[in-house]
Amino acid sequence: MIIDSLMTRARASIAKRKHYNRLVAEIDSFTSRDLADMRADRSEMLYQVHKQIYG
Image (cartoon, rainbow, N blue to C red; front, side, top):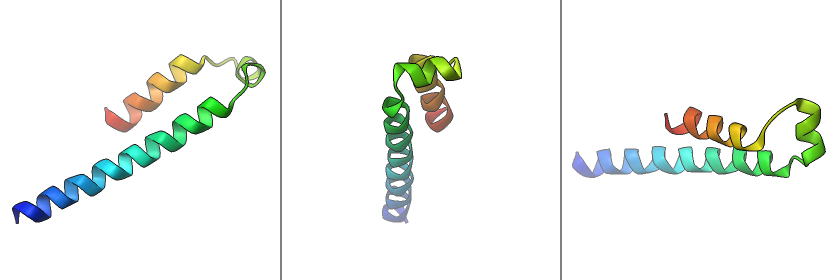
């Protein structure tokens, strides 16, 4: 039971990290021009992604 719980939490943590890394890579791929066109701020986007994934 304890091992199952640990494995479930580990899988969930790995899935969150993969999702976070994928979104960060996508944000990092935007050029300054892309961000200006979207009227977006890279640091704010990264903050919101972190908040969305990890709470």
